[in-house]
Amino acid sequence: LVGMLSKAEQDEARVAKELEALIQQLAEANEQGTHSVSELAAKERDNQKLNIEVASKEATNKKLVADMQKLLAELEAGSTTADNLNNELFRKEEANKKLMEENDSMKTDID
Image 1 (cartoon, helix red, strand yellow):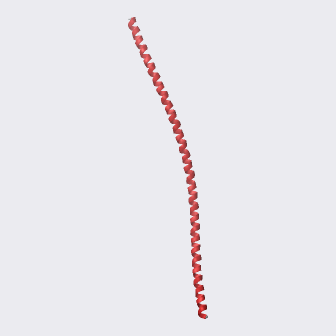
Image 2 (cartoon, rainbow, N blue to C red):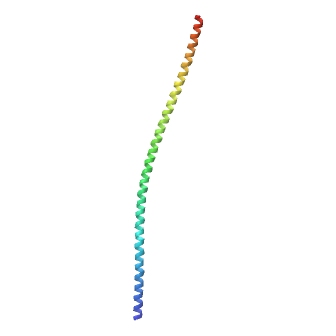
Image 3 (cartoon, rainbow, N blue to C red):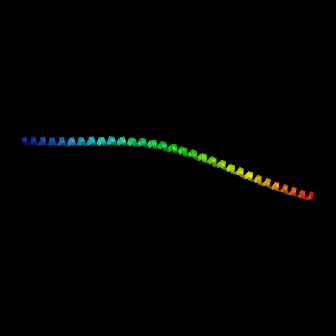
């Protein structure tokens, strides 16, 4: 009986040590898990900030594209106006040449 009792006490001490080691491992795992959750939460906050920044830059890019399209339309309209003015200038120069030729012809007739 004494031997059995001694063996039982040894088993109990061994189980207690194993249990203590398991509790320690569990505490460490819990601490790592808590740390990991905190890291994930921080990364999620950073990701949300980046998403907001990306959305802001996309909005800015859309506005810039719209502004560039507006400027291009104005440039095309200005180009058309410049072409029209050049054509009108050419017609007036041609008309002026004709008038000068007629004027020269009249001078010749007068002489």
